[in-house]
Image (cartoon, rainbow, N blue to C red; front, side, top):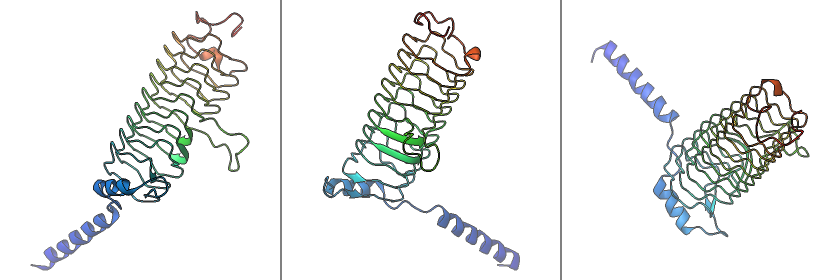
Length: 262
């Protein structure tokens, strides 16, 4: 081996070593996680706390007896899994697949779930303060969620849910508390938001076409460029809203109650 080839070989080997060390393997495989879950119970949950589970296929598993607090779940597949009632605060979930999963009554605080597949996910009765921008939440169940900002507990500035450019088409958002949520450019076509709270929400360019927003509290919300074409707005509260002149399908909506938006 001549000198130039020797140098090239050394450089190639060094580069491959760097790549291998940079892309480290997850702490557990799917089968290892399954074994932990089999042995777990409420008193002795499977210890997955702060574990690296990036990219692991964890679909269709029951995690109700697991501790996933602070786990790294980036790119993991948890579709159709059961995580009901878990505390998932400070987990890392960017790019996660939770399609069809059960996340009812979970707590998710201080988390990034950007660019995730959350279609058909059950979030009912959950408490979430997270960034879900650019995620797919079509047909998701957000009924009775408490995702509104808690104005009595804001020690580090406004902590709220971010749903910018999220696909919420045909989602069930009945009785959802989404006060002060930011939902710019969100797709809410065909969604059911009956009795939802959107006080002071940022809804610029949000699409409510064919949505049911009856009895929704939009007071002090920012609605510039939003679209309410064929939406049902009966009983909705539009007190002190901003940007009404640039909305579509709102002033001339056939379902508005007498005196609304005058």
